[in-house]
Length: 144
Image 1: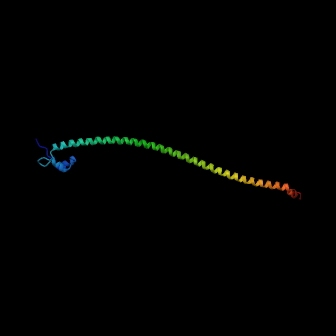
Image 2: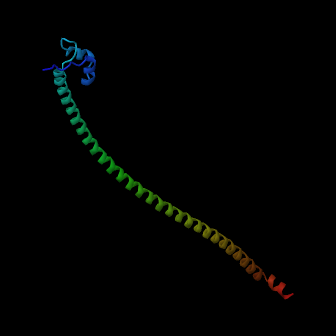
Image 3: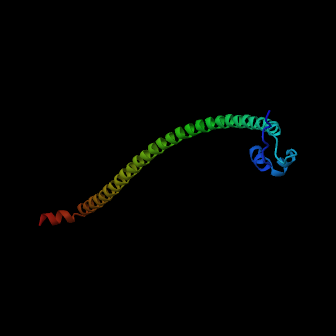
């Protein structure tokens, strides 16, 4: 029966992911780490890796749930944004309509003011005509 060769402590430290001093403590009389010691330690390392894998899977599940929530929130916000853009367009159209109505109202007010001025001039002219008629001046002028 041939004995398996031992592994140098530096190599064992790399395989096990431990400091080289700790690997030297596992070394046998020949200065190398026996394969049985390496196997015992790798079993513990594999167990630790399995635990880390389980934690990573649990964390990945939590992150997947968070991602779902973020996507749902993103979709809701996108819909709200779309509705907000539509509302803004509607309000812009309404403001433009109100501005056009205000301009039209202003033009009508200016026309009314002009008509009122013309009416005032007409009243003054009629009053002057009436005054002249009542004095008989117009009659005298027309008789000539």
